[in-house]
Length: 354
Image 1 (cartoon, rainbow, N blue to C red):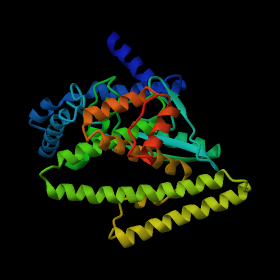
Image 2: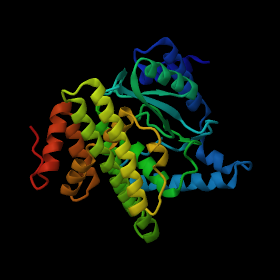
Image 3: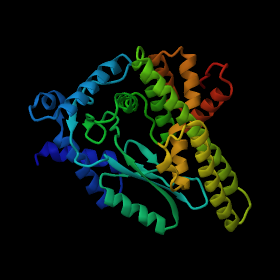
Image 4: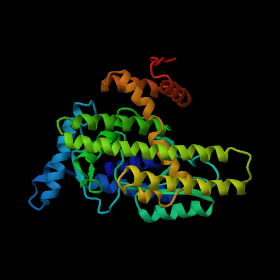
């Protein structure tokens, strides 16, 4: 390994881990370096005679999406113009945890990205082992599978084999989301970061599908179901929060928790049967519930409604929306969330910065 490769590996490790255990530190160097060292220019992959036609087709779609993303004001230069076959189904595995009778997320701190309510692993076995340790310590846990992630512009992100075969609509939404993280990102505020990226991705996808009525209708249906799923989960999460904050005994809280989880599963089944014509995309998610799993929905959707209000107030002009969110990013987390809460509750009032 040359001196610059060693330097890059160390940079990657610090970016991902900060002051973590030596084992995690080494694992992160290895995982990220494998991706960086194996990337190939997409033009080279597409031109190679042994590249499967289906892969060529998917990479061609992705390049068209990259070109479209430029018009959304997203930073595409040097991003997603390389391809890596990672030889595994997922890019990473993520572990989140909460105490048994609390929705307060356990956090881990990382250099540059701040403290987050999850820990990522490039190897499934390490993630499962870490989750087992947390369960043994009495935590509620959630191990999720990650097909894509952003390095926030610190490195050139590549198209990965873990998601290259998604549908065109899914690819567009995914790339818009990940590129949005390079426009606005706040250390230690995952809810704001993910909600912002979701709003950008949804608006970008709507524009991408202009002139494709069939595709647009599919997205409308999927988004409606996603919103119903999110609202259902958040409603039960709020009920859980009230139980955990009450003066009930721990045994009473455990019983309420069990019954609320059962009620959530039953209400999902009813929603699926009565309104979704048996649509099963969320079945696996509901198979085993935990506090940490409910938290994941709150993190990715908690501020979406407020940010949608701001986007609409800016006449759906994305560059102006980005500037507003960049101003929000400079505030303290408490002030930013307070302003967004006020915006959602009073959408007719203009956003007033301190």
